[in-house]
Image 1 (cartoon, rainbow over the protein chains, first blue to last red):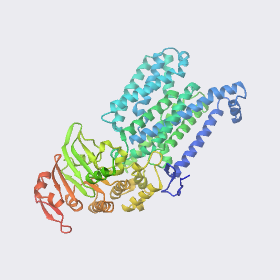
Image 2: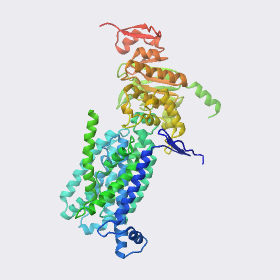
Image 3: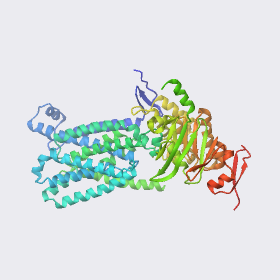
Image 4: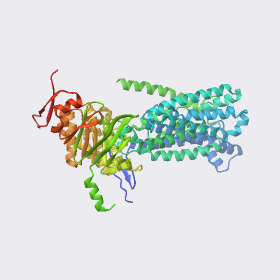
Length: 358
Length: 271
């Protein structure tokens, strides 16, 4: 190997062959810690529940042993649910880090480019206009609603990108157009809800909060594939993201193909968010809060992508675990992430104002 | 391309050249078919009244702003035909009042200047670290290398951006008002640094300055712009005359030799 390992001093880095990274011990330690925590929460999510299973039971059930009920609980209920939670959190965490970094705005979640609003309109339209009661559209859950949500997300963000285009896109204009388009879509969703039958409306409201209770294998696979690919490609954009933080003119000056970079980052954020929302509904505040926590944990100038993703996994898994164990009736995961996220948003805004005035 | 053709091209071509460029924003023309040629190893300063188009011209030279017609040539090659990363290895640009991301350290910010020499997988190498150290040394920032950029004074912050440009190791430097918001002694620091870089590396510098007397001291050539066209171009002593100052700035001023350097010193007339 021709690579060399240089010092672990503060200014140093690691260079092995074609790969070289500045050495940031705090980021590495935080990422490993988040990964360990995510794995613990994942195992806890499978073992803890209305019928408690031991780790041994779970392994036995996965291997095809144990009782039929245990196998059913593990392979058909808890494993898909835990996987959905883990990858929804991962995708939303990374998507949030992408949008917050490229817009240079901590308030810019994937929601601002219309993804979530588009997905919601798509899903609610499928539920309401698709007709039928819960039992009828339950069959559609594997394909119908996720597909409609994905289509809605992609169309809405394409519209935002198109309307924001003026010989290129600027993040500021993109945010304003995104807010406008999202408002129209939210109005449309409300209209659909008002028109809907009671049963459909209540089903739609559950979906709109974001829940893992409907997780099943057919919805896990697309999420898993898109999340893994999307996160891997996002890591490829990491160096360019750091450069884009310098502002448009300096970024171009140091050789960033700004418009191409922006299109790639937006596309990745949209696809990751769409996959997450299609699988679990718009789980609130994960994409917004998690990158900001990751940023402060790592002490870097932008949210580290992988750390944001893993912290997203932790937040969603812990919210799901709490939602179905602490309360007498199950509380949807999106409600809990929002309950955690909203006070954090207020705290961030208050602190931001203090920083500005000091 | 054969070797002979290649060497002639390099020798003959100016470092940077604007050929009949028309520039503007949203259909409003700021500069109309302007020609400008910049020789290698010189310091050229663009001066002119606010809104005369000097920053616009600098932006187009740095391929930040695309001309609506005409073209920019980098060492004889149309800049639009080169990849932006390749251009960045030859040409560095410091925009007017750049902003640093919050929470970034001086060293990390300067390391971003290495981007044209990096790949997506390699955002650090021992060579990058050595070049960054040299840039910090040259700009006198070694003591604050690990501090947050936001905690620095205005003068230090401006030097951080210049260090970023230095770390880029490009032969051509475009600096848009590198002395804005600085007190006189810090303005001098920056200009001395620019001249030092030029002498050490035979760099080509094009900058925009407002202080005419300082421009005269530190430039080999001054280009005076007025309403989007060049009204004077040459050595500071030829260009900075009362007539031209009146035409370009509507300023009535006397021009006397600087007692220290002999370069033109602009003294506005009494009211």
